Length: 335
Ligand SMILES: [Zn+2]
Image (cartoon, rainbow, N blue to C red):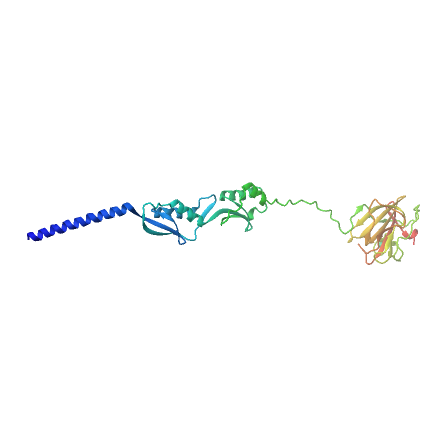
């Protein structure tokens, strides 16, 4: 029994001795070496860290937010790899260098706000507040494209050229189209504007008065209707048929006091020449007018062309000779 006890004590002593030895050995190892992480990027050692968790957190944060102006995030193709090792204490951790190397390997993405017009990118501003301001300003200035302007966050690997709000507004502004209220053109009833005025009331006289001037034939042609009474009313002039476009000549020199008319009413296009002594000649149903009121014409001058405008059934000249407003028979003076 006694022998057994002695053996036990011997064993305990031995165990204690071994534990102390181990403790000292670990202490020496710990004093000389410490646990570290080798950091590799794409297979290459880029540094060492003893705070792996903290380093990786910093890398993650950088990827999410970037750190430069307008850098939205950083894309890093390859994440660093960590390998535990026990290094001699003279190897120093260098997290900052590791971080720099990782960052340098990444691609920063810049965030800008693209201003679009009808979906097309026109220019870029830095912040969404600026983008909002650009749209608000365009609306206030009543830019015609204000409704088609939108903006969108834009991420790009290259920093885009930004403009400030004022420049953006200037570049995008489209002035409203000024609708000039055009004064309605005088409604002309045909292609010939009316100039001057004419008396179209029709009173006739069968008297043969002296005109004091000599008249010549305005056109040569066939007389198709003479002056005077008809079954329906009175014919106030002389009708001479001629083909459309035949030149009509002034029966005597004078001043044009009317040129124009309505091609769909009574005389159609017609001309009045005032000769003096109260004498006027009327040329009706014209197809073309070559003179305007105010113009002086000499006898035989072409003033119009034969036509069938107005109340007419075929091309002819309706010639009237008036004295002080009354219609006289033209055949008293010519034809
Ligand atoms: Zn007639």
